[in-house]
Length: 279
Image (cartoon, rainbow, N blue to C red; front, side):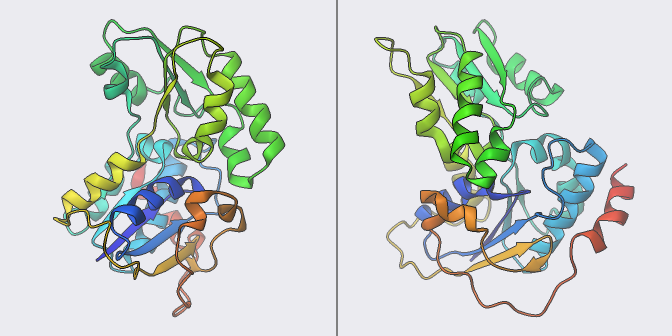
């Protein structure tokens, strides 16, 4: 069994670690785009082109399922990815956990990248699942980029700025960017009010991993031997796991990178025609 995950950077580590815990015997393919990151500031058309190229680089390794480990890419490119790859390769998007957060019927905040905050996609989720619940959308300027670099000072500054935008009565924070799950406890420490109710943080990694296994009919087997291999693609080229990934527990959970195979084309060599077709 082989499971692929894609993102512009190491935000996919949260879902990757969740897959690893559920199926330690699964071979993993991580397809990142260091040549094109960050994706957030790109136009939807440009982002879709990059995402399609990164996805096809992963698809060339013959996975059974592809997880889009990025909220922003899911918002803008999921439809195009499914049109290109399904039904041969199931594609699982990452959706902010707004539905379970709203079910508690208490004020909640959604921390997300500026590109996702206020997007029609996120607004639709709020209208569908959070009717009558007070929702504060918090744009987290620079947080994903700081997590990507494992820049401790920048992470603390970005978390503090987003915490200032989070109302005191919020009891649940939805982590609407996969990068944020890597620093969840820092977010909790910044938002938890002294003497207030315990703060709940809701990410998507566990649900996404479970859905991917369901789609391919593979039940969780956490007791399986940790025999799965790891292949890392950097803008289409096989390479090492980014050093910053080892700064997080999720990155240290992964096996060593498998030896590189035949050289593959970089994403830039593939992106242009995909970008045109996505427009």
